[in-house]
Amino acid sequence: MDAEQLKGHLDGLVLAVIAGEPKHGYAVIEALRTRSQGRLDLPEGTIYPALHRLERGGLLASHWSESGRRRRVYRLTARGERELGIRRKGWREFATTVEAVLA
Image (cartoon, rainbow, N blue to C red; front, side):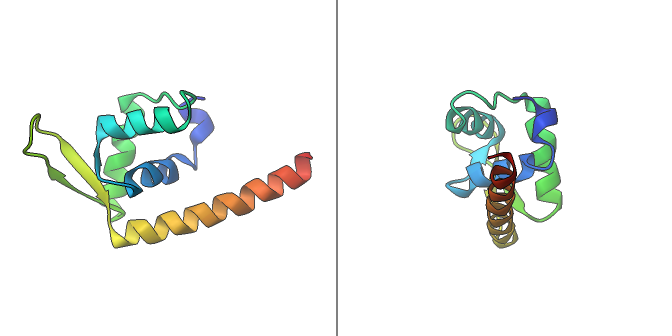
């Protein structure tokens, strides 16, 4: 699955993988790959702009990790948690509707 197919869903996916615990960019890429059983193998050039956009929008906050390699670590803000809830509900409604039409 490529980035074009994910338009409109990428931000929600990124929020979902960060919701469990804060992650740096490469860990976000790995979590998407792992959770999707390899179907979402997205390049850094797709993920990092999404992380920056979500941070600018107040849905993520970040800090520099001082342990080991210096990396930017992202976590959901309270606003990000609310947004993830909204996106999950919207996805369930969308998926149910599409399944009803296609079935």
